[in-house]
Length: 498
Image (cartoon, rainbow, N blue to C red; front, top):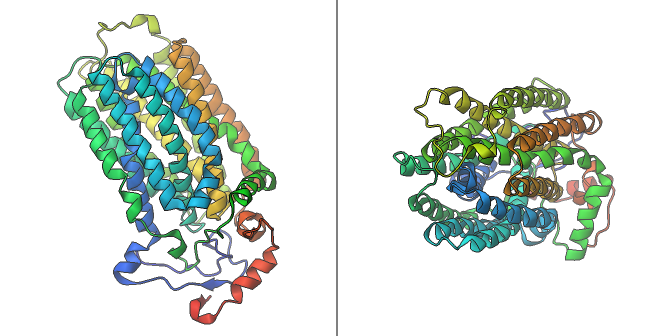
């Protein structure tokens, strides 16, 4: 983790590597030794990854089993409707809450809902009438998840320099998805000899223990106020503002940078496709142990997909705009490759083909090979889509407060899409309808993102574009020149000059 000081960085943005030097600013001395290791941005992003490893990662493993691991997916689908409905509301305001409470406390509050949710599935496996508890736990988790993901996006993107954002997203996404991989491995071990269509109690118990461990991690993370990026620039977390000023900042984020709205279709599609993949493909046509194996391979492929696309998006030999267009082109290829391929499987089965006693595909069956490879490609597409969405938000800002709001918008719109798709599935609409809607929304998201990349993504982010960074505790916006003058006026003993 050696620090490479990147000269010529702008304000507190990190990195002039994308387009050379714009202006000279003060660089802060980073701590050394064990303290330096602990306060290193990569260390903190790794810890952040493990927070989500233990919470959302295990949630994904459970969801990836199809119906939360049960034969009848209706309760799981309705729980997801409740979850994503409250998630959509809480996430929209979660950036404001994160900026007010601080990221560590927001993360801590966010992790608690995952233990409750997984515990509710264990309860429903023991008591057949516990379905309403599962749905209620889903609604509570939605509120918690909005908080967790807003804090996560703020820290992950705020700690990176402009030239590191793809790599940081890849590191986080790899560790986060390792949670789903481990969860799927636990499920596979529990169900390897289970040829039935539902998983056992041991799967839920294992998941519950891991999520409870995850609740403790945010308490051990560093205070963002003390973080210095690898290029020596300070992470600016903003002043302590009133709730009124924070809500005003949320409004300013939208009106001063309206191009974020062009990413909303991309955000909407980013959870819609899970319903078809998890319930209508993996859950529909495979038995329990094969679903567990598929789940393991799906999340394992995500680790490779996120790291690969992250490396491309941070390739220093290419300008940031070229990388943005290249990432978009890869998504176009992946979306149409996966869905043309999937269409030839989906056209051959419907909901009416399956009952509780149906014999479903096992991993020993000859028809399994092509179908599992498709599922692996679904995992690659998911990781590439989510990583690119985060990277595009990171290309628009370096301000953790603004990024918290951007991530809140992302999760709010994403969750609204998830609520809609899970509700459609709970109503038992035809599989083909959900499949076609998934394909159309992904294509529409790409169409709307292209002009946003052309008009908004630059090779460098300027302080003039950082609205919240220029807002004081009273809600007053200051000119960028005032901020620069104030920063360079600090005593030399507190910093090193560039």
